[in-house]
Image (tube, rainbow, N blue to C red):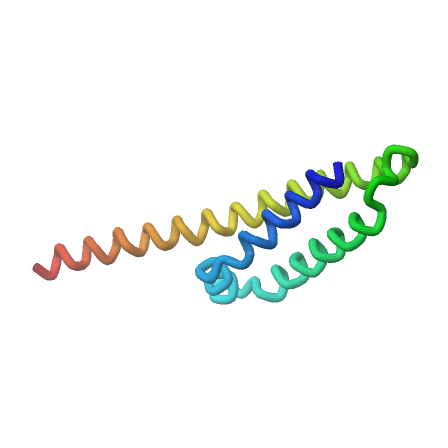
Length: 105
């Protein structure tokens, strides 16, 4: 389970490091919210590192890690949705620009 959590953490943080997404997040006014998300994901990574290998013998810890994994999947979905919205806006802008260029010819 710790490996899956580590993968999710790296996936989320890696996606948030995409320069174009970061700029879009700032433009959308979401920078503070995303920074809080980034901090929480990093804290989760530290916590999981501290308990690595102990979940098998500790049922409450295993349940907590399972819940954390579920929450990280949800966070990953949110980050993916943000990137999708950015790309969709970029494509729509390109279509509008192309239409304007055609009209001006």
